[in-house]
Picture 1 (cartoon, rainbow, N blue to C red):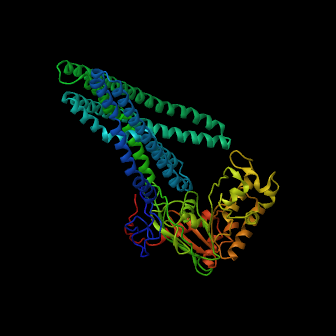
Picture 2: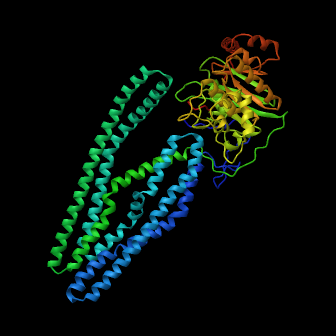
Length: 604
């Protein structure tokens, strides 16, 4: 489902409008411009040179058939050794230049592929899209591999067929017919093999999901489900293997038949050339030259099936990369709002999950100024975590906008906005690295020093425990490192959200794995940050946490309402448990007279 972050009904200017150059009006590339622009820049740099090298390589490849022709027609009749050595030296020189140009072309392709990966990989890693990295690696391998070189040679094969016609029209027609025959075989093989690829794809995807689920069960200590998932994985993977095996068998059969066809064509051209030589229509040198020309003309077509598959795979990978919201733009300065101005402005957010017929929530709107603490509560599955992810710009709403310090969080330079935003997901993870690297988010160029890291850990209540580790802040944790307790891991993740004292702090049930003392320390830290003008949005179910919020957003039944603790009526609602409070709000909404709703353009 395609989602647009900009509702058509809003009167605010659209920040993602692009100029004729492909640049967004805010100086960034639009969501589909990063990959496409990188590919176009690489093409503009390399294609003219590659075309010139390919033309020269294929012209120089004519040296071998010309050498054979001259040896048979001149040297064998004149018995001149000087002519033979001169021809041999000229042919070897031409082939040496051809090899050098081929090497240069190969290096250009290799560097073009690596340059494309270097340009796009950081943005893909930032997005956390491992599938995007796989697509990028597939595209790089195609550009730097032999398939691309064969593709560059393919447009010049008519040159060899034309020379074959010069030798004799019969030889030319055999070469042309052979090329068309091999192309037809490659097309038939691709059409027949496509069904096996389609059958194997969903099975392999299901097998990957089962393997990930089994690994998650193993980490959670659920050994019986893990064993059951492993058994099911074997069944699903078996289907994928059978489909791949059938496809490989069919493709192998076509490849063998294509090779047989090429060899048969060589026998045919020798036979026809011999008949022509006996009849005096061509010389013996022309007969051998015809064989060499045929082999050179048909070589790319024999690999046409593999070449076509490579082109299709690279095209699909590029299409997926173009859809990623990569940003390739010069840095822009984030202008911070003064303390009394609006820091967070949420405008009519609508979220429609894939496959759903009703929005998860619609019309969410509120503003938060410096010092505000907004609690988000409601029953399980109401969309609280989804809403927080939208505020953080981690996903896109179907409609609506999220403005942070006057800038659109959904279309701006996410890396710069993250410097003023702290975000804690519902299930935070520790990354393989030191404690300090985990807290700083692997920030480069010494952005945070040890004092700032220690301050964030102190705010999260983790400083004492971290210093008690074997290497303190330099202790390696996460996968492959020290397995820290769940409570400390949670506090380290909280410290990561609080480092640098960000202006906007988004926390999803941060009290998980914390005892009462830890929760009280967290609330005290948030109060400290609020006094500095920070805005806190916290997803919580505990009344002991919600009581510290200046306002509470109750999400339930696709609706949301802000409750102000300063109003007595709203205080009575908050005195109930969160789930009951949400139910009370739903009842109030249902009791209200229904107003006719205009179609909002939500994609369903």
